[in-house]
Length: 312
Image 1 (tube, one colour):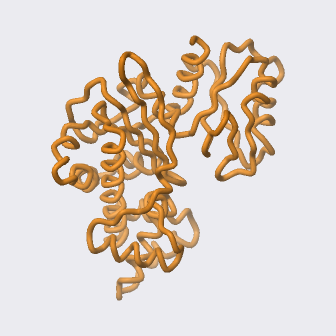
Image 2 (cartoon, one colour; image 1 turned 180 degrees about the horizontal axis):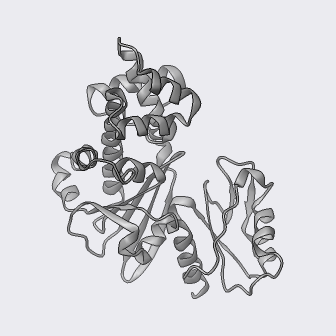
């Protein structure tokens, strides 16, 4: 149960300790446990954040909060822990399947690409953190092979995150734009200069304002499906696959006036590549795929894990 919820812009604070001081002031509550989802690899209950100049130390946080210890987890790992407590309103079914009590996989495209899993067996649940988004991008068709060649000239090594993220969607769009001979819609060109370019491409695709943007998004979703299928195979996710991150919500659901035709095309682009795994295709066909649509999922997951750890 959420009792109190506040948002703090991370870049406006020098550390997580500073944010906690602001959140807990003036009268800190008596805490039973504390859990944090952090963007970065957690090693030895310490983490250096990926996109912030923060060094987060679990024992120091515990001392600040008056606890014997705190739980630090990867930011996608905490989304995995939220799945057992997510309500029906917090998720949307993208593909039906026959889920069982097996492992659960989570893949989340946003600013970057994150992957995690819940490993279930013998009544025990363990989470698996991952930096799989930094694994090599694996193209399948001719367009993706050409995209890889283009990105290699720009970046050298090309990780999956170079394609499956907000900046990755822009990379795909720019690749297609450079291949085209006719000019862009001036309105889209202006939006690309003035706004978040990934949001501009998404909006142009969902509203039918740009066929080029539609192609970029459909390529993105196909590659997303392929990567999700790879992660599902790697974790043997017979319990199902969940998509997190803001991009999937925007592209699959969109605003209220998004057409059902677009939504169907988006889901088809994803699921076709998700299940395209040769002899293992039937295994993927049987796996359900859900979309997390609640912004509170990471908070619930961090709390769920922290309470479980405190009770052990």
